[in-house]
Image: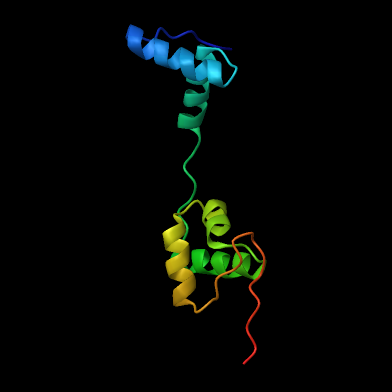
Amino acid sequence: MSVQLPVNVTDEQYRALLKIASKRSVQAHHLVEQLVTHALKPAPAPVTIVQMLDDIRRLHGLGKNDRQIAENLGVKQGRVSYQRNQMHLPVNDPRGRKSQEKAH
């Protein structure tokens, strides 16, 4: 079952919506439907700091760089960099390869 809801937007807002829809090759009402679907998704459970540190350590061990880890965990890259530094983990290659420890 579906229900139709009237939505009041200004002409300017509608034109902007049409522009975005055109770029995405969809109709404007599909954008509104996507927003409703997104709004109704349950929020993810909060991650504890211990879990985040474990995830950073695990992903770093797989050769992921800070940007890739941040994207995977849904946090800012600066937070990953800070936590990685606190754990004394070396920077992984920007392409996502494991860093090579320099021999002394």
